Image (cartoon, rainbow, N blue to C red; front, side, top):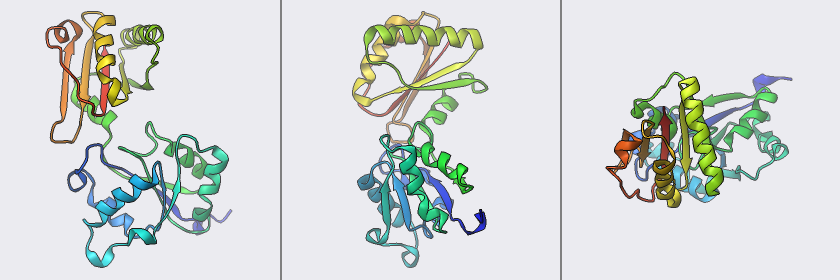
Length: 244
């Protein structure tokens, strides 16, 4: 295999709060997208919109017209075989940018599938610096950053959710490990209230929402304290962390 003729796959971070491109996207990302014509996006329409905003931050003589760029879909329904096909142009020498819907590709994101295919094909993968709500929440939580686990979405069914929360408390206590999870914005409040009802009084809960935005909120309290400071979570992306 002549790896030297292959292009590279760049993992391009997206914003996690609207209209923050000029604050959270590093200059290195803006420099690299000047040379990329082929993109894989979790949602092509929003991927185009995001790149359009980034292009406005680039000198006019280095911008690309969005219509001239090629986009392919890479979402949770993409199979591994399809991912292999998506990187075929990269094998022929074309660089590729992978864009998540929010935050960093490959973290709680289908981008990891094409990265897996790239490694098996000997293609160089280049992760670029950018905002990650999971890491930002952990950084600001005051919880254990040496040992932590991200669980994605917890069960919707109430009984299964209760069992899962109790299991996470046990894992945290046994391993002295921060447990991290997320929920869709419209179910944030329900999850928050369930945590208050299920967790032990001494368990520490951090709620981090709207990170990097103008209304960013991050607060850690014990469950017993949260019960005296109940709040209504807005329907914005949020990360939850617990530690016993």
